[in-house]
Image (cartoon, rainbow, N blue to C red):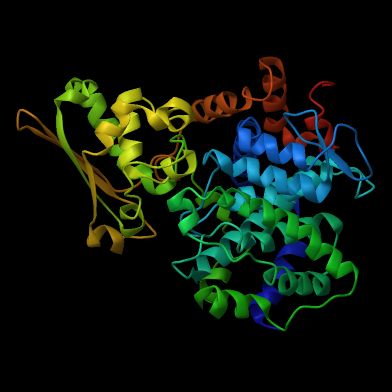
Length: 454
């Protein structure tokens, strides 16, 4: 057993709400609100509706959860799968650029399902819930930051299962020995995810986060049944099998002092984060140059960015998921629709002839200096050549929504409302938002989601 696993287990078991600075608590609440909004937006999508209908029922059963935003009930681990899936469908959930993934939606669905059910047999306070979430998020993000996943892997469905398992274990009151074993077992329950799914619009990708949340319950059952993992599952899986290296110094750096929720980012553009630098630069150009409001004035659009962004080069994506991983489409739909919100990447926008016409004018290339600036920065430069010969350019080094350039509380609140009202009425949305805002004051977090009764 390594010092790493000792340290992570001690951190998880011993961390108390009273040990958390107020800014950490406030950021964690923002992340939870963001993820709940993403889930509520996602459960209104046809793919999510179909899966929910197949995996749930109209009446409750033992340990069943009422899926928020619906009238359906599902067993807790199925609910975790459904929440994690719905929360990623729209590509609006928060993320963590150093972990190169989305820790929040890999942790919240598991513990949300847990506290909504009667499985634990007791009330869970908002403070307990927040502590478990922060611990699970931290461990997931640290393993993500300390590993170097193979380029063919998609980060969803990998290290997230460890964070979700630890968060459940925290609420269950597992001891240090049990938590060490949980780290080893859960690390072996990762998924063989494929990066191509996101580039080709393979929507199976949307269940990866859900699977991690569901598998976390299996990991807990395995602990209860006295199953064991290998001596250091994290090292085996994230040091050689799905990742080329594992850096324990990164994983343990200021553990328990600096919290990874403080390095997250939020999204307003409804697409992959790798598009965001480009869209931030584009939106600045659109604000400064009214002539861009008429796309017939545009001859060509050249985008320079880092390697991961340069891969998003399909000008004619086949579906909503592929569109969210296409810089040509993202640029074109933003120019035509004057927004990069959910509606610009779905429905008729996907086949809009004007959008597809502009998308063909977009050329994306890798700038090696920009690639070298990862993961601290995610830059892009957009140069638009007008038919009159004039070139309009703007470059950004970082993306709006991270800790360097945060969105305002009002912007994040507006985002939550725009997503939540896809599944709830306005009154329910206001009630839920207010409840989540004061999460730490609740003695029984389950009542937060009983929005019809609050």
